[in-house]
Every structure is written in C-alpha cells, then in structure tokens.
Amino acid sequence: MQTLWRAFCLLVLLSQPAWAQPPATGSGQIQDRLKAVMADPAALKAAVEAGRKASFFCANCHGEGGNSKAPEVPNLAGQNASYLLEQIRKFGAGERKDQFMEGMIKVLKDEERMQIALYYAESKVAPGRADPNLALRGRDTFTRLCTRCHGEKAYGNETIPRLAGQKIPYLQTTITRYRDKTGVRNNELMAIATAPLKNEDVAAIANYLTQMP
Image (tube, rainbow, N blue to C red):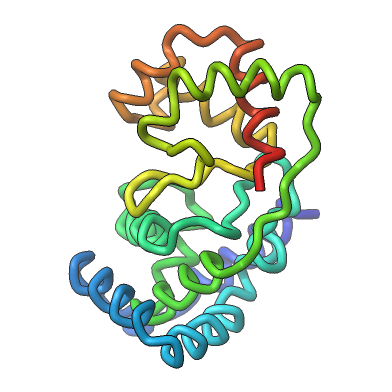
C-alpha cells in the first residue's frame, strides 16, 4: 500500500509544469534565512506552523510530526534544522538519489523547504524500544567510535545528523552501507569508523541509539 501511495504522489508531483518549479536559492542564502527566522520567536512560530501544513506529503512515510511509519524510513523529528535543510537541498539537486524524494522536493519553494525543516526540528522524536543488553554493549562502542562527531547524546550538529531516537532497522541499514561501501552512502570518515564493526556491533549500536530521547 505504501509503495502505491509513493507512486501516486510521485506521479502527481512530476506532473507539475516546469514553470511551477522555482530555481533553488544558493544554499548559503537559504541557510542565512533559516538562522534569521530561528532568531525571531514570532517568525519561528509562524514558520513551524507553515511547515506543518507544507509537510502533508511527507507524513505518509515520515509520519505525523516526523516520527516515521516504516522501520526503514528515518525519523525527521528533532533533527537539526540546518542539517535537514541541506539534505532537502541535496535531494532537490540530485546530489542524494531517491526518485520519490527528488520529485517531491523539486516542486517545493525554498521558503517551504526551510519551513518544513524547522517544523521537523521543533517536533519531538519518539524513542524506540531496545534490547537492554545490546543497548549496554552499543553504548560502549558508540562512545568509543562515534561521540567525537555525533556527540555524547547523539544529537549531531548543523552538518552531522542526529541519531538519537532513530529506528533500529534504519540505523542498521545505514551503518552497514557506510561500512560495506555500497555506493548508496559515501563518506570517508564514516567508512573508516564503521570498517571494524561486525554485524552484532552494528545491532548493538542501533539498539543503544534508538532508545535515546
């Protein structure tokens, strides 16, 4: 059912005329706009509400408020707004590949992209359930390999994603793709950090991260 919905949405979005797809603003400009809105409480509140309305297509996969409905789809709730906005830009520019995501994002105006990023950033992530023993083991591995970039609470920053509260299957798949250099995920530092991990290590890290608020 979800596959059929994605196909329908993609057909609708791609049927929009070319003139309805505005040229993207430079990433620096839209990031500056994002920071300006975040510094103004009234503007932020208005942008978050606008983002809630603009994200109605996203909710089918990523869930209401950004807590995804499918185990392989990432939660967007609580993600850093600057990081999320950059990923939206990359999908729109074709730098990240996903036919559905690319088609959907291309029809969004820059202001809508920013509003959606802020909406999800302001939403609360719902932590997942974990195996306590695996989570304990995963904490040690995460602390040793990952905190330098992702932080002790796994919140990330403007350029590094938040991992806390993500779903176990999504985390396992993503970490494995970096480790195995499948070409789907390309990052030299991540490839080096994940290279020594066995599958059971990956499972342990995923269990640790999913239960973090």
